[in-house]
Amino acid sequence: MSRCTWGSGVRIWGSVSGRSRRLGLLWSWCSRGAPCLVRSWSCLGAGNRSRAEKTPWRWGAARGVQSSFPLDARVPQDVLLFQHDRVRFFRLLGLFCAAQVLFWTYLAHFAFHSLRVTGSKRPDSDSQQGEQPLPTLPGGATLNLGSNKWRYGFTASCLTVGSLILVGGFAFSRRSISRVILHRGGQEVSLTTYYLFGLTSSFTVPLRHISCMSHRSEVPAMIPLKVKGRPFYFLLDKQGRITNAKLFDITVGAYRKL
Image: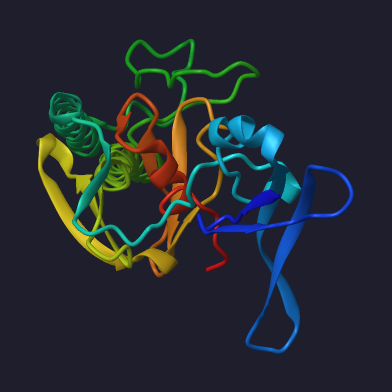
């Protein structure tokens, strides 16, 4: 007499011819009419019942995947998947961007209003009074910082550098994630991102619109997330805390074609 234990926990008693232990596969019919593998099961003889009690059932044993139960993303309540508090850092980033904008704006104002024509030609050696000589570059070329070309060019360059620093800091803060919450049912996810000076805001998107471009074990510092319909990547700092790693990997941390 042998006892067959199925993956679902149903036990069937009966005699098995041949060897005392056999491994079988449970097949069921899919909706398309083709057989598909559902679970594995094992039959053990009476002498090996103690081993059956100690050996846990393996989901997908044919592929060697060992797990006591399959993970389900349909959570009964909201679950916090990721959290990283960086309010102080983004406050300092906001102050840095503001200081840079003020500095480069002042420099642009100085360049536009203070640069003057220093001279138009070199003085003759015989003349006692003449215009001041122009600054000379290597090679003998003269440099007139007061010309319109230099004034407008230097002013525009200063304003561009200040604007780029401000835009870069703002974009980085808006793409840095503070929290990831999987909502009840597992169909929607809320992402909380930062503003400059430590402010935050949240938005909710369907889970199918989120794709993780690299597994968290493959990146050194930041986990990139792509959200459908939004430019650039959202970044999860690995210094943050992932509260449920397995649930994170099958939901937000999974790759999807968007």
